[in-house]
Length: 317
Ligand code: NAD
Image (cartoon, rainbow, N blue to C red):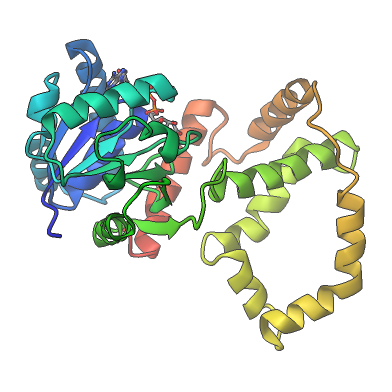
């Protein structure tokens, strides 16, 4: 399907970023939120994102004008979704609110419009449980901020039409996203589970006294993190050994098994982790070189700049 008109329902952190993503890729966008105050926040947030894109030369001032002009803000659900071919819901993460938003959308939207929920933790089967058209509902979990990070994790509910899931997949790919398909619903989807598995190990290493919080972060950023910004771990292993992935798995063999046995002693998340992690991160920030900065604000600006530069290298911006 040739999707030209998208609606963003809920214009918070995620919804306003989706609006920029859609508009940057030439779609006409309507953004709905519940009142004018929220819409003002959406607008401010969008301008902040556009400032960073412009500052780091990812868009020209003219392009910025076109993006802004393509997004219409409204507190009328009907105005937002009546003409939309693709509806991206990014409302609050509560099942009853998501169900009520879907009911409101269904009252005004075309029956063949695709409906994608940004939910991080709910199942699309539950969100669409009372829907008139559950077949057109998919889970589409972005990574924050969606207008920069390409990943979107797609899930289908028990009644989703597989052809419409495919359509959603093709649509996201066509606007520069990198979509992954979950073959079945699973809490945390893929990326957050991978992150949490790693973070569980960071906690364990620090709590066992193996290393500081700062060194755990440093080991990641200046080691595997650099490669992971290029390829996934399977691919990195494939390239790391003349025998390819199979050679690497065989080579790791016994020592890998010993590491895994040691790591398996992890049992639970420590209660006092925050008390350990916070001073560790404060220390880390103190030691950053001046070009990165020593405050949350400076480090966030550095992160955003680096993200934009990396995406340019990936030819995603
Ligand atoms: P947010 O609180 O910033 O935004 C939620 C928006 O929904 C607000 O603007 C609010 O006014 C609006 N809203 C409230 N009631 C509504 C209603 N009845 N109809 C329509 N809009 C309504 O939250 P967020 O961080 O943007 O998260 C939105 C969704 O995206 C959640 O489902 C969340 O799980 C998911 N998500 C968040 C992140 C993240 O990092 N923040 C990442 C991926 C996915």
